[in-house]
Length: 161
Ligand SMILES: CC(C)(COP(=O)(O)OP(=O)(O)OC[C@H]1O[C@@H](n2cnc3c(N)ncnc32)[C@H](O)[C@@H]1OP(=O)(O)O)[C@@H](O)C(=O)NCCC(=O)NCCS
Image (cartoon, rainbow, N blue to C red; front, side, top):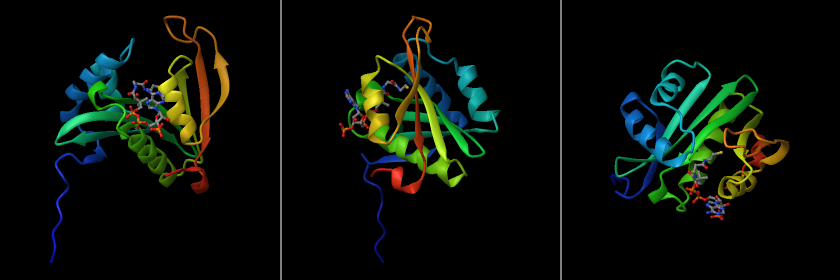
């Protein structure tokens, strides 16, 4: 019998747990101009019954995370980030694919999200996975940046990769 172990540098996605919160909060603070507080992250993780949260880890280090709300046939990607040193290696893409699969498996037919109009990396990622712009709101964020509202179908054929 051959037993195979994951390679040390292999990325692994699993549900977030309480012990991950400090690392998630540190990535959140280093990534976003208006980061969620650790209490807000903890609320989503522990108290929001519609929320599922995942992390991607490499050699036991949290490299990124995603929070998704699934409400009946609708889902909303409320937060996704990869720590700066780990960006550009496919981890954001793996996380997005994972939450899309999770939402679909839990009954969602669509996923929605909002993104800064200036966030070209995130917009390119979302478009790669079938998201399209459905609306725009000027001065949506505190610093006056407009938001784009994007939506993707979660039908199986819409998921690339
Ligand atoms: C957006 C984010 C999650 C992408 O994660 P990542 O691990 O760096 O991205 P990946 O390596 O998985 O790239 C996947 C796709 O994203 C897009 N992308 C990623 N980085 C990009 C960049 N710098 N410029 C343009 N497109 C980019 C590309 O479409 C890429 O696919 P490709 O490699 O076939 O071109 C990451 O940049 C991040 O955490 N940014 C800060 C937080 C954030 O903006 N979150 C989204 C809020 S709405």
